[in-house]
Image: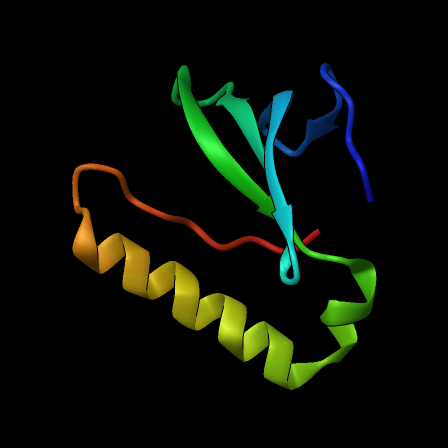
Length: 78
């Protein structure tokens, strides 16, 4: 799922792509609720049906947040 600038996912507005890899795509986005820039990772739709992939994503998100408390990571599913 490639997203373009201006696409909205919940409170997030996509600004530009940052990276892509085996677990999905990462975008620079703006969080409208908090008024700040965030990195937003979007997983392929097929991963939503794969418990192992979802577990890996949640582990990645919780591990990153623990390493950098001033830049919290949040996991959401759409």
